[in-house]
Image (cartoon, rainbow, N blue to C red):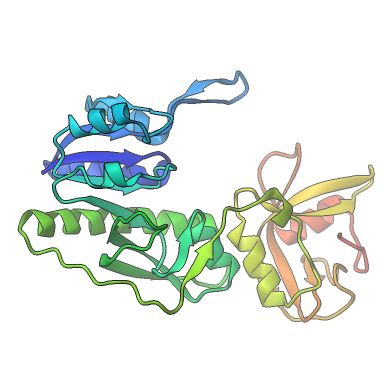
Length: 309
């Protein structure tokens, strides 16, 4: 099939690679414009942009799709279908209507739960038992379209958003490949999303990153794991040179009780409002690499009873 691919981050790369490997004609790739990054703040293309360049596929980085010129350019690709994976820009109806078979989106949740910007992180943060990925036909509404394919992944204890992300990437690529094969054969069917169970995955804010120890231990651990590695949940403590911010990258519920935010033992167990959590992976600024809870406590010379705000 003749495909326009629209995506930006690492999550979208396996799907583009799979569609190209399956012999589909990638007429064009749409992605976000190169952004300044790194120590030198040089312009860096998105992961999808880099792959498209290696494949010899034309790349477009428009700042908007809501102009007649943008629609005319898109129409010129003569696409059978557009495949959208974490593109980062809403598609207006004029664009949605152009491909012969419409636009298919690969979304990282079990719809209608976690529509929106941050479905993978929100699923972990909420303590969901499972997540997944699905292929849906795009509509003007935010992730409201009917679903054609779906695959599920359990969220195991201690799983981080990064690990769930990495599990869903190849699964989603295979799912989209199956969907296009069925679409090409006229056998792709869609099921409307149920009206019940709609939850929105709002964009993660930096204000959410500070750990609130007053909650239930399971909720505190899920919140930490869902923010790992970015933006990274953090605690603040005086480690000998005044208040220092420490990123917590992984945690598990643990036995214990005490005043919320109090260190209970040498393994990095912290009391919560109900129960406690054991911090299993942390990163101090300027220390390079991560440490276990026990290594952090030992290196910071903390004793049970210390307060970690």
